[in-house]
Length: 231
Length: 333
Image 1 (tube, each protein chain N blue to C red):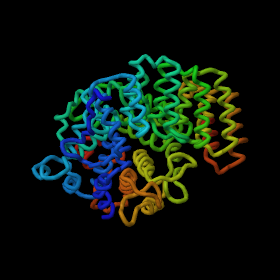
Image 2 (image 1 turned 90 degrees about the vertical axis):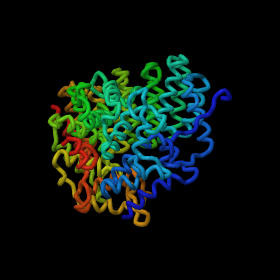
Image 3 (image 1 turned 180 degrees about the vertical axis):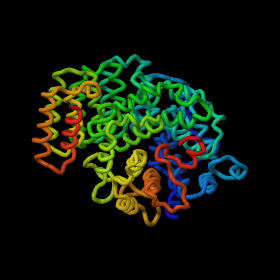
Image 4 (image 1 turned 30 degrees about the horizontal axis):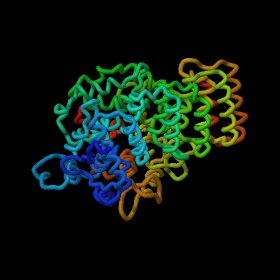
């Protein structure tokens, strides 16, 4: 990066909050700003963005820039590149990834590439995250997105097995009950109430595998009410 | 007094060398300033709050080390997108555009001086075909952004065409479609009901004068009331831990739907009180944890909605999360 002049953090003519950043952070971001000022999209800019993200995985502007580089370099349609970025997001998230940007990056790149090829590995990854935290809101939202994007009957059936397993493991997992609703409706809950047979099955499940086992748990009761109201 | 002390000391804390916390929250500084300024506004008079934070430009500001908050906010304006970024040099985003406007209206900044047309264009450009909103041009969709866009347009309504630039009907339709089996709302269609998202959806519906699309208000009220746990605190979803910030997300909605007495106010106030730091001031997410400005703001706001702050203090508006007098001054109800 010798050809660029690093640009210091500009907090205004005099600074509101005087913050001393750790020096490696300062260095990386000074060059990141220089790259942005030069309007450069390149391989080295891509590498630098990864360095900056390792220091602050929630910095949305850097994530945005990274996707612009991928697009510019023609890597948005390159399978190996996409896998690489999915791995990056996974490693930055650690075992319990909780920032919006890490999850959104997966969706953003797969929206362009197409999620089908990565469905199984993504579902596996999400399952691992859920093993650490069965209620990770971002993980569930992303899981819902990918299932609804692919929208295949066999996939929905497998997901129902997954939901049943989770509810069996922890009857109080409200996220799993919420997912059950989505799956039983095949992601179409807004405009297509389920048929009577499915409704009966779902009501029975809520009672037999929920309310009867733990009557003081909210989730199966709410589920039951939801089913009845819809019918 | 202690909370005032905590807030005043905040700038000094962030000043400390190798502040990692300062570094990793740099990109959302705009929201941090909004939480700080609004919390202060609930504790002291407008002129006192302005003096403590150095909000407005003026002759007495020139001598200080710190610039005015208003000037810094304006430096965060991202001409390319038309919105405000989380800090100087950051991409415009709905979250920080809202925080910026919230700061500016409290500070009584003349909105005509802003590039109103470009801000409005920024917001309208983010509406999707299904009525939802992305947070920025890069496309993350979330009902948080539905709230941000409606609040932004509402706050700017005195100097712009209000909601003309978007399809308000579709925006409402999308929010309505995020209603779940339990009467609550999630971040997207199908996403689990979550108190923070419920606030965003109900707040947005209130701004759009469309609360009638809530299919089962009693069911929603019951879901919200069930967030209160034994400690008196509120959680965000079933079986999760109580957290002071839910005092805001949930109380505001209960206020809006007229069911504030569906929870025990005294028990909640007790929980918030226990989460205070008795030595240095500030409020944490729960008792015995470290305070932060986010939870300090929402704890104080929660106490305001509970009517537990002294009568002499300003009250907070549950829809706009701004002092009530500011909302009225903007001509909003």
